[in-house]
Length: 287
Image 1 (cartoon, rainbow, N blue to C red):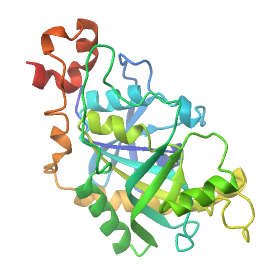
Image 2 (image 1 turned 180 degrees about the vertical axis):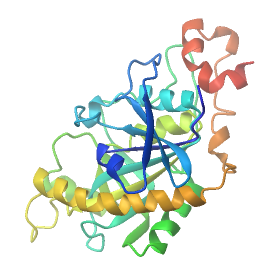
Image 3 (image 1 turned 45 degrees about the vertical axis):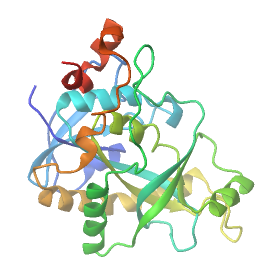
């Protein structure tokens, strides 16, 4: 299988962006079941890029149902070293307007029903997650958005809720008091699993609404979210094309060795079935 080192996880609308040439689509079998959908390989910004629709083509999966382990494993198998995540979010701050772009640097985890680690079942490991997004990739993303003169905010806290319902007003107000900048449903465990898989991960969050804390705004509706998200897709496409064109080939951040000292279990005691599942990530530490 020919390696592709850059991936974009987002909606299927990204496939229609200007300047993209689709070459093929592939299905990768994983030890964790099927990914959200087939992975589309396309040429963008002069490089091959893997596109994976997070919710499946036609938006079939709720945030909690997304087969994220399979998605990350499939991308790692493909040779992906960097992931750009595109995600719709609600704004928790007045200055973050609908249709603005946000590059978050922190996450507050409010999920409760998601399998969020490749470790377990006979293998213990602890990977640092103090800075949940790749600093180098996030900075480059911010600089690219700013250079294209879109409204952009960085160093924001992403509150990840379970969903699928949107927040209550009390919850929205609470998250604002915590310093939350945006709220969404898909950053986790995607960012955690990418870190455990030693893949750089950065997010371009697209603000679609003011959540429900802002009482002088109409309440959040799915129609509002979809309308604003469609408007942001063109901007996202331009940003991605530009950043991929100038992305350096060499990856120099620490994400690529995030699990170097993470494995605690004596390798002789790791069940062979689990070792087989995770060898794609950690065989370099076991051998």
